[in-house]
Length: 383
Picture: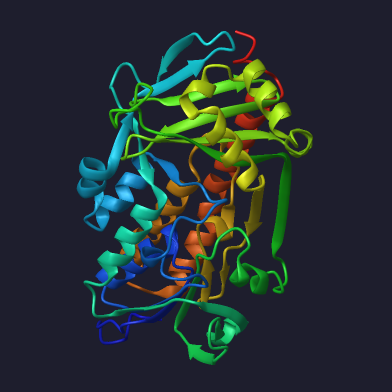
């Protein structure tokens, strides 16, 4: 408990496991409240490494995510300097014609395409401005006792073991969370996961010969084809991140260049001159399709000692575009509860866990419904 009897507040010693988008943002919220934060990340510092293949390169930032960034003073910078507004969907028919579906024709609200690496790096860099934040990369969580606030990390390069204790442990370590794995050992913990039959593979539309966009940039471009689809989000360098969603059986069947090109000529003909045949072949066969998983679980806390947030608590399929935004909203809500309960961890963690699951379950259901609508019911494709 942080609220002492004399009305003063104890500064908490918090360990955040996971230095991705949600973990690095949560570290900022806690640092702004004056708590000591140690941020542990399994991977290398993303600011010093190239984009990892298999993870979405750019994401859609909505008002939920913007609100969180505003609270830590980064919204204006991200929106004005590194966000590309998308005011609607640009639908590509199979005959190569297109039509627009605006997001909000009345208020002109939009979502923004933002770079995952840039945003993650920005959050980490902002934490450098706080003396009460320490960052530890290449640290793998190998053991824990959440009720006692104990964690053991192994440095992945030297194999050294580091044991740490904390007043609060926050697991923001993604869909395959090591912290959640430990929470699953607790009684009365409900957990459900579902892999869908579709995977995803990222391709790229490069800039045109003049260095500009090859398509109208202020839209989310979608090629709906019933059982499979493609989407494209604009990047700051005028390229496009293209994501192909298909059943794994389809990915496996396109096992040579000829099959791949015939498939694209039949279903995505207008994309071929945009991507380029040789680049399409190179990008497609450079990697393999990644799986998509949805996770629901509760409760999110272990007494007043540990909490999971972001994908660790509620990973969703990407068809509603709210995965990152829901994780950022976790941070906003958690900060509001810190204010409401004057840093009393027992009250904060209990209320977050008791109330937050309803919204995250709803977001998961909406994302899954959109997946069914677009891929199974073929509603858009049949128009």
